[in-house]
Length: 256
Length: 306
Image 1 (cartoon, rainbow over the protein chains, first blue to last red):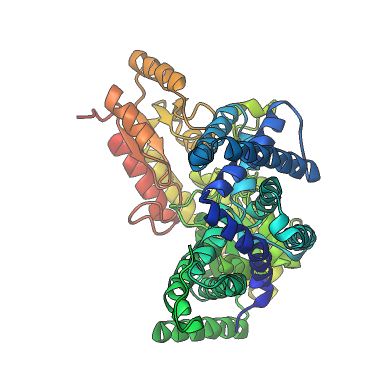
Image 2: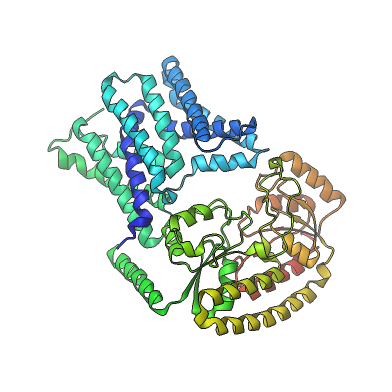
């Protein structure tokens, strides 16, 4: 019924994004640093604009290197601030976001082509993704997941921040900030009340179901794909959060 | 959800099979004016869709599945070109992987290639803003450009659909006849506008100004695509106090705030012109588009703001 050649790459991109973002999102929620992805993505964009502003015309992998470099620098900085002032970490992340965004606007006042870079970095559109772009992403994410699950509990805080920075810089360019934020936070919210052994698999399923539903609705009604997936994510997660604890546990397990 | 969804799917499938059976020429236009122009020439032999509507800025669009599906089945692609769609058309062409409408094929028309382009920058300096290296792409605001593009569309339709070639020839001749008369009508209505000075929101109106003899004295955006700065607005205000322009004009998708701001401080009237088919109530085809554009200009030019 659907033309899978149109939405197939989008669905695959969604699955790849979910593979890293659901476990990362659970940690983000635990730490209460919800807006870290927006801040990191904005800093990655700022890095590219800065490189442009100092006259370095970056293309292809160089842009990626600058973006990841900037994102990792910000991540290392946030790792330090969390150690120094954990009680204001979320506020600092917010400040970093507006600072990076405003600095971008100031730099762009003289350089609108940097603005195109920034747009490319922040508002990727999931429907434009093609299979060639997904291969490197799959390799990168396999590496990140190996580090993540290999180290498990032994993962130092700085490791979390670095993996997070790399994963976000890659995903934001493909699917855009709204989808990255929703893939991180919404499934993690839906599984909060489940016992730990169910959390990750159910989170992945919730996310996948949302992508399937969103992409299906987008095909039938011709809605912009990214936006409708975000809406589907909220609907699927609200239903899951209501029904799953009762279904999976005879006596609801209260976490946190 | 079911009772809505199922008919929609059936309708979509039905439309697909129906259009296959009739061998209609599928025209995919990037902007509504090209869909309208193709329909003037192709009549019921073609089916034209537009990727954007008049209230969207054609520089940026949201990715929808129908855009890819539209490119896939397109026999003829008509866009303004000159970099206007640079942000999304190349990726759409890759996703659509339709060899008939790739650049250089008879099925690909970049309309601005066929007119005399204005504002081609002598020096491309990126400090100048979001400039189009190939010149100003908003060519549809001069009806004489549409006449030139109509010739190209008719020629390509004959090439793509030889069976209906006589039909396309006839309807081109009929269109050019009617259009030439319409242009003469608009020019006589707008004769009094010649030499009047205008302030633009964005540099979207070079061709209209050139056609009607309007004089661009300033733009609200100091550099195309970059929001106005306080210093630029102050300078503009001083300029307008010394030498008031007759009208401030903008596109329907532009933010009205900057022009309202300038109107409040200078008393110079401002107006949104339709810019393309569908850009104002009643601007449903190319004729009414220019009827309304000229009417708004004539009614507002030099009107004292109360």
